[in-house]
Image 1 (cartoon, rainbow, N blue to C red):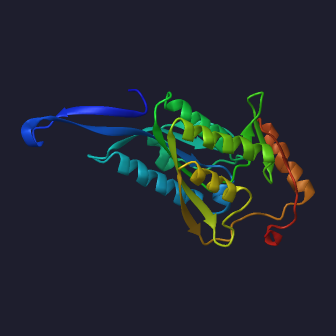
Image 2: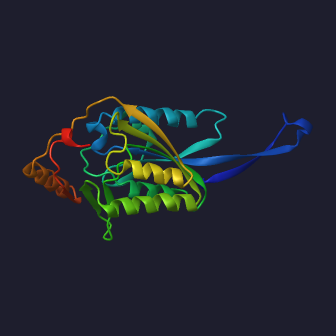
Image 3: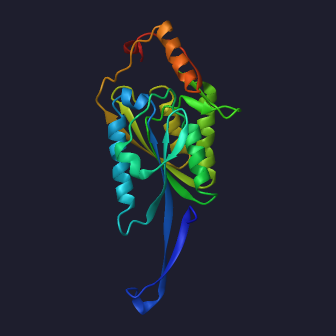
Amino acid sequence: MQAGRIVLALAGAAHEGGSSYLFLVTAVVLILDRSLSMPMNDFFYPARARAIELIEDLSQPGCPDHLHALITLGSRARVTDPADLPDLEWDVEYGSNLDEALRLAMARFCGDPGRIILISDLVASAHTGPDGEPVFSTPPTPETLDRTMEAIRLCAEEPISVEAWRYYTIGREDRDNSGVIAEGILASGGTVQDVPIDSPGHFPPWTAEEAQEIVAEAQQRGVRGYIHVRGPREADP
């Protein structure tokens, strides 16, 4: 079945006069963030439950929209079988590649209009480099932000609406670049639903040596990346 918005014509026996009527069905791609920042902030399991709930809503009789694809993201984005979602766990993936996830979602619509539902903390810390490999950094680099904002603008041009559920720790609403990305979604005609989580998170106060070990592990997974050490998380604004 072709993605996007499909016009269905039905013989309306219940319609006055027995004439036909039209309604629109919109394809939906749901994106779930399973990168390391989600479990470290206690976001992942509430976010996964939200994704399951939204997919169930889309499958209800009479719902005008349908789930076209589920995409999960870490340092890379990949299409995931929705049947696997209840048992899906987070992965130790350094980097949240919103750029690649949004572009993969756009490709699923084949140029037709549609909806993207994005469930994430909206912290973009990775993008796909010219060689097709993910590039990770924390704090995120300007290039990662630029690539992600470009993907958001391209969605609006299709037109594809982006509806974000942004998970955040109370008191740290605009961590890293999440506030800028939320503003970009709103400026492009999308929506952002904030979901506050009351949790201190589990971020360690990385030393320079520990940071390099993290980078080495990420590189073993095929991710190019680097970390700027800023001191203990408790000192962050």
